[in-house]
Length: 203
Ligand code: VGL
Ligand code: ZN
Image 1 (spheres, rainbow, N blue to C red):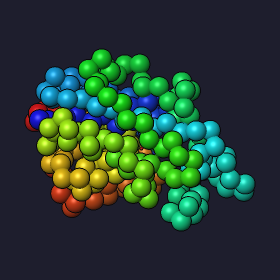
Image 2: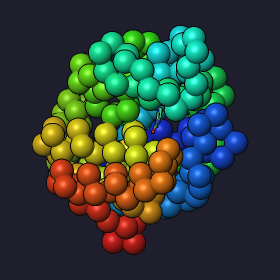
Image 3: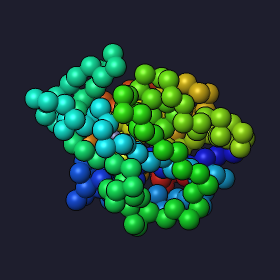
């Protein structure tokens, strides 16, 4: 069984959003087109409470891009984004979600960020994604979405650690690129960890 994991294709990560990823909307037609190739489709959704510790606005004298220790874990601070029930947290209107079997929400604990669709950044807080995929008989996961250097990367790394044969669909992701070269660095990290980097044409 092959599953497609669509990571965080939400308004706030696409142009015009609070934490917009450059060209983040350009991957949507590709994701829609490839859905038919998979046995199962799941999506993740960044889903923060307003008081989330990853928001610069929730810390005095801190700005976006600063680093803090959040519950003992190094945390870069973001603009307020993907607040639960807000329009920024909704899936982009052009994304076809009609075939999505289940949505896994993450980042709900204000004390810890959650980039991976599987676990919180401190490796506690399991979203249930791994057990769900295994219960459905999935052995191979294909990851796409936003952002390549954060949520997509950590989902890929955890997917490998969870025992899935894990593919990154390179043309169906884009990076935040806080620093120049972050996209290339993320690709390298994923490949070094055992991910297979492919393009949608190869599917
Ligand atoms: C993400 C930063 C903060 C992502 C989520 O989806 O890549 N990045 N929250
Ligand atoms: Zn977030």
